[in-house]
Length: 245
Image 1 (spheres, rainbow, N blue to C red):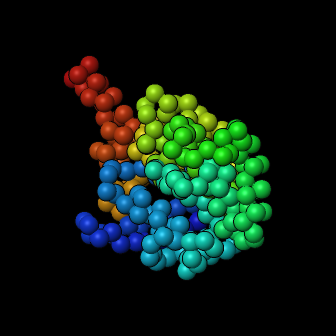
Image 2 (spheres, rainbow, N blue to C red):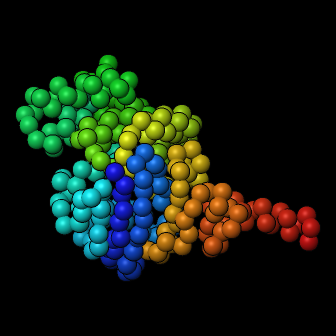
Image 3 (cartoon, rainbow, N blue to C red):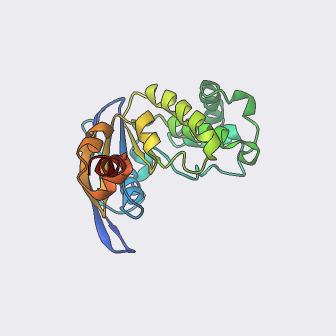
């Protein structure tokens, strides 16, 4: 299902409106980047239905605007993962499956296939405090997918990981996302996330999209100074100025 939306939300401090218009195709990953405070996470929260917003949010032929978050069929994963510390790994994944309805016992049973798929079945009875950062990230993604979403929203999913583990977990996440049939929207501040995970990128600055395209497109012709710095184009231009100036 194609994800198409035009959504606006209000950020209170500093006060400005976030206005986002985007399209993500099935099986693709669309990265959303921008400076701190640009409204990236606020846009994700509005799309997921966690905050008040205006506009249209279409997933396939269904308009999700106005629906509560638990009826939007969108899987969400945040930077801090938000695993329930009092629930086991299996129960964390089962909680997401339970959102679809049915008995808790059935949801617990349905968690095992997801844990097996992510190589976590042997850790099913552990609690989040006993997991490594990479293991917790896998559990959080399994939980997001266990609700059988039609789309995924990932908000800085790797930012909390130690740098020495980030490359390995990023590669693993890329593998999992390639197996997901729906569209994914990825908020990140890391250019390597975009290089490894994303098919296309949009740049959000002060609540507005300033450029969109592939990372290579942005690097060749950056629309703003921030984009030039993010893509490395500014450094290359400075080097050329020194070399040929």
